View 1: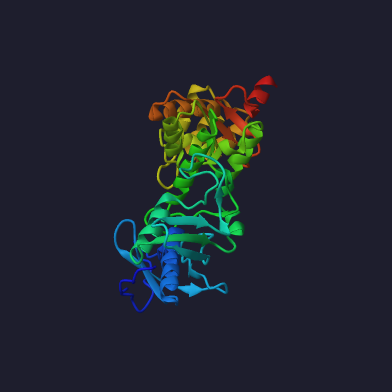
View 2 (view 1 turned 90 degrees about the vertical axis):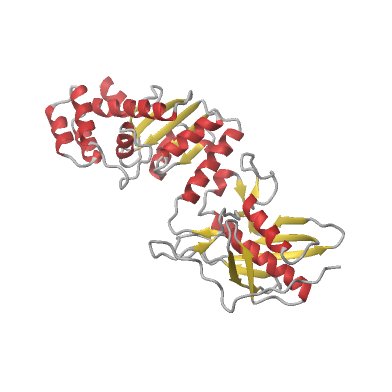
Length: 382
């Protein structure tokens, strides 16, 4: 039989997510919402009615209070508030249903509609199980254990989650049929890069777990489209967008044991890598025009190219002038310098190749991978 509940001291209003230094409102992770919904559902089963509010402990200390609603099936749910973060799960109904099991003391966590199912190794979750990450699972258990010590089978569902998942990288990770229940702190910080970096690392983990020896890193969607055309025989699982976090991606590839890493991007980020800047965001590191002048002179480029390197504030302009004059040697020097800097920075035994694509991501211009078709090769043949 269920044991009596301890009294719960709930606030009169739902606790707002704390604001950050940029005056943007923080939000709550799907993990926090799932824990709150699960606790509310257990309370409903024990008391016979749903609480209006429920509070839960957060992974790094403190507590959060959530408003509880009940759907047409009688299940408790929490509306996910992403704060000011542009999260595709904002407004999602993170829903819980449960069965109290007097014959077992364990808490079993299942995935219902809209929660993805794991189909590939490398995620730290069992294949065939729900995409509910370890920290949210712990949060759910801790929230339930505050009020009930018996056995529970709790199912987390997200109506509409399968459609939401199309806006995520879940399919790349082999997570099918819905979203993942995520979060390490319980709090979503607006425009934080943490979730992007975590997803990127997961993609690398999944790729190595499938037995791949080569990882292909692209800085954005256009670069990735070009990368896929350059490596049409590779599994889609080995392609990952790294944004500005090339250094993080290179280091993780080295850590997990990839023997070959292909990096594909445009001239601005190639120039940053050639400078030794593994964080390539344009606000964080300026293009070194003296480097462009050096590669122009060392490659015996004509004076127009050298002047462009001297006068420009952008690598893009330098790139355009090189193409206009059919002089790609300076760009060729840049990718080799970028390769050298990356291999020095990462100190890896893996071979790193750098490929520079055009500004539309239509084709490779120069590459340290001699097997790839490039504009540079065409010009030299011509």
